[in-house]
Amino acid sequence: MFESLSERLGQSLKNLAGQGQLTEDNIRDTLREVRRALLEADVALPVVRDFIEQVKELALGQEVLQSLDPGQAFVKIVNDQLIRVMGEENQGLNLHTRPPAVILMAGLQGAGKTTSVAKLSRFLQEREKKKVMVVSADVYRPAAIDQLETLAKEVKAEFFPSESHQKPVDIAQQALAEARRRHVDVLIVDTAGRLTVDEEMMAEIKQLHEAVEPVETLFVVDAMTGQDAANTAKAFSDALPLTGVILTKADGDSRGGAALSVRTITGKPIKFMGMGEKTDALELFHPERIASRILGMGDILSLVEEAERKLDKSKAERIAKKFKRGRAMDFEDLKDQFQQMRNMGGMTSLLDKLPGMGGLAKMTEDPTAIKQFKHMEALIDSMTVEERRKPELIRGSRKRRIAAGAGLEMQDLNRLLKQQKMMSKMMRKMRGKGGMQRMMRGLEGMGGQGGMGGPGGLPPGGFPGF
Image 1 (cartoon, helix red, strand yellow):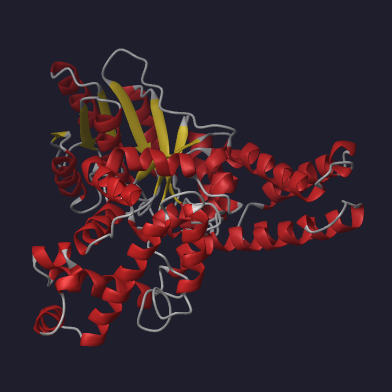
Image 2: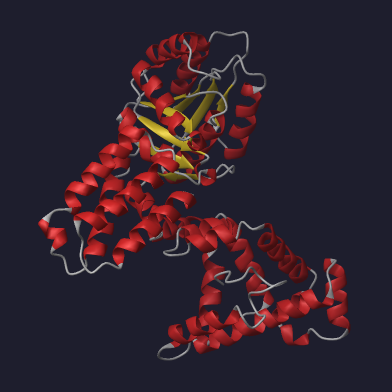
């Protein structure tokens, strides 16, 4: 997420960080690069202009110019302005009303409204402990109602059936009456989208809004449309009393223009962002955490929160005890770690939230790297439970059987065995004073020793974080 913007901004700020002092000249040069980076990220021009003016004004202040580390002071200014542009802090849903609280979803066709309805339902049920009902008022798109019914079953939300011959207002009013009868906490209404903003669509959604009086009217927009996302959001904001925005497909948006533009253009907060296709891939939008990611400083808070929800604590504790005792990590542990990593959204999602790991996150998307992870899993799956727990048993005929069972060559298995030995050595180095430093030195040397890096192994410089 935001890879290209992060890379460009990082390089611009890095050049300034090495300066002994800030001057109008080096600030001007850096701001020129920052401006270019923002425009290439498809950030709306008015937003870019305001951003650059604010940063320039603050950077030329005496407090910064006389700072002991002016480069860092400048980075802090950029960070603070990124947060300001995106909305200061997360603004959650306002559900403080007599149940059922109605949430109306609006947006163009293809933006991901129906999927977002399912994600939001799961979010409200799992994290807010709400009883949720969903209904589709999209009577135009083929199979829209069936799609929502399927997703509702997946996330275990109550589904109110509707038919394509019904009027959207009638559907919404009947669903609201049924939600009251069933004592539902939240009713989410999925509306019809169009390929473009048109008067007919706006008139219909206005009628729906008047009929159900939602406490939240959320505009769903595709992050990958960049500046167009902000312009479309403005059109909806002019027609409807929007309360917030859901930014979808943010995991595929390497530029970040929509995230940096929507708040300023519409005046409405981004409340959530979709980070994948699965129904649990919905994150609260925290401007300060996103700014931190953009500047390559990671997002540890989000990572910790995600770990709390998704990791198997008993398995994590078992491996942690091994880690403390300096015992070798076996292939059973490694297989568990692959599963845990998938639960956390995969390697790319994991590294994206770690400080300074943006480059590695991008590297893990390399088809070669993905292929190597699959090979490792196939080899581990081909082992018996005893072999996974006691790697030293794997030799001779066992090696041939495991490699054949995985459909791979003997050299692939030998490489995996070597990697396991090296990881085990590093874990033993963790014992005692200065253990972490020794382990990191070991990691640095692995790339050139045919262990974790190099052809046929894991991607160069890549370390799976086990």
